[in-house]
Structure formats: structure tokens, C-alpha cells
Length: 352
Image 1 (cartoon, rainbow, N blue to C red):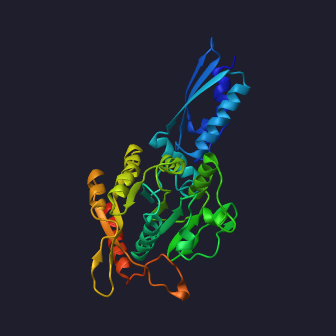
Image 2: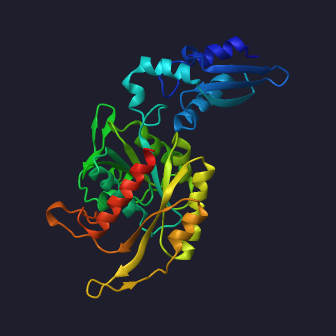
Image 3: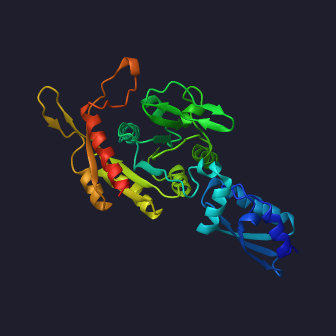
């Protein structure tokens, strides 16, 4: 039967995934309980950050080590290190912790852009909000987290790939926004047929292995709905604010409410609602046609107890062949001005 001392020695040599310091040094082995009659070992481990893909890898390593030492069954609970201990080791590890956007104490503001269903313009909103924030002088990153339906590089007119420097990935900088996407890692628009664990690992790499540098905001273009990838993102982020995108149609707003409800259930806050495709305005007469109905944005904002950040009409960007970005609205475009107003509201709400 394995003893408590053996357990502490085995686990003490394992590293905290964020601090890269042994659990013995961080005093991360909080409790060890052994039930000899059942040959069961139960441990409580404190980490710098819980809920990450690395935590799952550590959990598997702990189970394997303890069973290899003779335990028949293993129980593990994770908690976060006390702030004073965390501060101590953050100081010793220097920039390595700060390079990890998921590390506690990182000051970047996470803003996830979500929708209940596809086709409502969520990615368009993500791209243009990121560009608008950059126009306001903010340091902005954008993760195309819609792993199966990646489109951000194409929408922004990006035709090059990130480079690798040492063990770090350098994101592509376009229109003042640092961009990373699954599109950079597949050939010729090939479909992604990975299962959940692989997708979770890729998303975690976007947070921890990309050389983002100093950021004020990191926007995430989430997949539509409330599936595995969206859940992974919610679990990984230490804290996040969300913008929910809908069309004016009542059904779209009804479905989008689920995405907002998931944000609240995972203790993320909602910044507001953006209503896309609000109306079509004729260039000749100025008459507005409410193609998808009216009221969806207001209804959704009321249901989620938040506010409507803006309404975006149906209108194509003005294309510049010398600087082609097919879905980005210029600063002087009617929609570009609306996005700038939304960006100003986002800045006000996140700096209160």
C-alpha cells in the first residue's frame, strides 16, 4: 500500500503547469488522504490556474503515478494557490508567467463575441470591433476560435501565415490587430475533423504559445451555439466579458439567449448585445426596409438584463484593391462609424 510520504514525493516532483515550479516548492500538495481498506488515495492539489488543458494532463499524470505506486483508485480535487504564494512565485519566474495569457494577474481584457446560431454576422462583428478598438489606440489581439468555421483571415484579407520564433508563434498583424486562427494551420481550406480534446489543445496553444506581447484587449470569435469548443473557451478563461450578436428576427434573438445564458452560468459577464442586419437602406431613396423584422436586439438585451450596444444595417464595405479586406469597414464608412461608437462604449464599460 502506498504511503502518504510516497504520495508527496511522487507528486512533489511534478510541475505546476503555469509556474513551471515543482508542487513541492509551491506547497501545492494541500491534502493527502489514504483509505487502506479500499487501497484508495485522495489528494487535493493547488495550482496557479485551474480549468486549463494542462490541468487535465497533470491529472492524468497524477493518476498514472499513484496507480503505478500501488493505489487501486485515485481521487483528485484541484484548487487555486493562495494569492500570496502565487505572487511569490510569479516574481521568481519573471516573464514566463506573463507571456501566458491565462496566467493569473495578466491584465488583458478578454471579450468573447458569441451568437446562438450561425449566419448572423458574429465574425464580421468580431473583426470590425477589433479593428475599431485598434483605431482607438488600443493594443488588440483576435483569436478566431470558431475552429470548424474559421473565416477571420479571409475576412481581413490576410494572405500570409504566422512565423515560429523558437517555441513561440508570432501572430499575423493586420490593420493594427494581432490575429491567430485555425485557418493558418490547415491547407487549402481543408475541413477540420478533430474531436473535442484535440480542439481544446489547439485553443489552449492559442492562449499560451502565441507571442501576443502587451495587449489591452483579446477578442475571441466563438463558434455559434453552446457546443464543446465554446465550453472549452469558457472553462479556460480566468474571466471574460461577452458580446452577443443577433439579428432583429425574434427567433434569432430567442436562440441567442442561450449563448448569453451560458455566459452567465460560467460566471462571465455580458457587455451588451449587437443587432446585425437591422435594416436595409436604399442609397437612392433613403427608405429603410426591415428585411429580418424588428425588435430582436432590444428583446434579447432586456432578457439578458444588459444593453443594446448598437444596430448595424445591411451594407457592403467599400473595397480597396490596394489594401483588400473584404469584410472590414473603413473608418469613414457609415458602418465603420457605428463600430467606432460600439468600441468607445466597450472601452468605457471595461475601464469603469
